[in-house]
Image 1: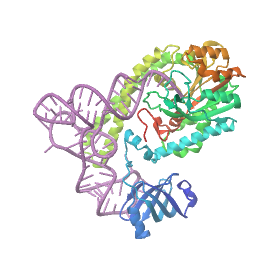
Image 2: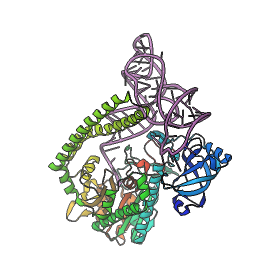
Image 3: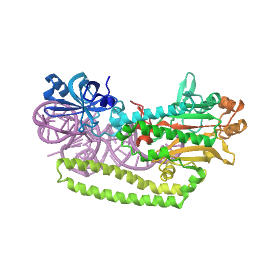
Image 4: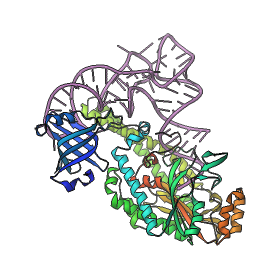
Length: 498
RNA sequence: UCCUCGGUAGCUCAGUGGCAGAGCAAACGGCUGUUAACCGUUGGGUCGUAGGUUCGAAUCCUACCCGGGGAGCCA
């Protein structure tokens, strides 16, 4: 069967394509059909004089997203978007679609989310899902090539890994079960059996977060490695990210183009070593005069931009009254863009003073807030590795730094361009008595962790691991502003359908 | 939970106290190379819901519902 992706192979030959109508344009004797077949989009041309009346009438009856089979000759034509188009000789209609809700014009977020099952057919969504697939494939390839064993951690659990976070509770016969928010503890058990393992599965967080970075159901990859210390852990995390980014750049170039992703920083991510700074150094950076003046400058820039945008809007609004119809449409479009950008700028103007205050008054020992991460990342074009956090803000299972008991051997990887934390990990505590103490300090019930403590009784070894958030990685590589477009059917606060 | 912005035709929006509007989509007509095609005609409304103020409410007030962005928390 012929697919649009391979159309160049059939130059000057006759092929039959099966697919759906993406869009169409017609005049008296010419009909242009954009056909979508899952592998790509191809322009098909029907010339009235070249086909029987029946074929012309079939073309004329098509609606957006109707399904059909077309037969025709592949010709090279630079007027066509893909460089190739199909001169149609026959059309077999499979089904004429009813009025399709998603027109080729713009739509709002709510409407598109209500129609997510159809939105997936749109070009940008199609491209994002293909990049997601490439990332998943790259992750499996990376670990499999290095001898890691993929393991499936349970999704129902009887206990919380980290007591504070919110869990989804379900009935489990006469008992309670929770949906997992990390497979890590099970991963540690498996690592003691297999050496090198990784999980790849869904995780659930009942946090009431309504932001562009949050889902209630998302996919996480959690490698766990016996005999790895923190440095080896960081090396692996960096290698993994470089591998994923390189694969996507190599194999999904077309999709990135559809997504209009600027790849210069992604290319640097592949070739340049990631900066590694300690939490303490990061705090110093936040509190520095340099950061303060950077934010001042940013505030000034935003103020100036706001004035400029306001001026432009006034000018084109004046012009609008006497403009021709097409120019009016252009002006309306630009006014919308200006309004959207002004909203963003106004939000920045409201936020920056708070960011500055929070950065300058940051106290060693706290965890970074969203704005602190944003400020840190402004200095870098590629991912940043931050290590050795205050133990108090981190989980009970993290090993303390032998050189400073206040520090946990934890590591976070922050993606550039505002995409935030994509990796969190640590070297794990491997001493039985210390682990017992930590569980007690965190106020956790020891009996729940019986089996976990066994791992420290029977051949305990130094080991490390981390978790990679799939959707944030997809968002970063695709340049998408919201994780809801990185997963086929996002589950979020207030969104359970479709 | 809190802050903030919004809800008007199938869709995207304008209308801020006085006759319910535009573009797109739909239907019909026109156009020989379009590519978010273009041009013309027609049909299309519970102005989120409930209450209040007013001679008069899409517009002002109150409560609630739904959605966007953000904080907290996190990947």
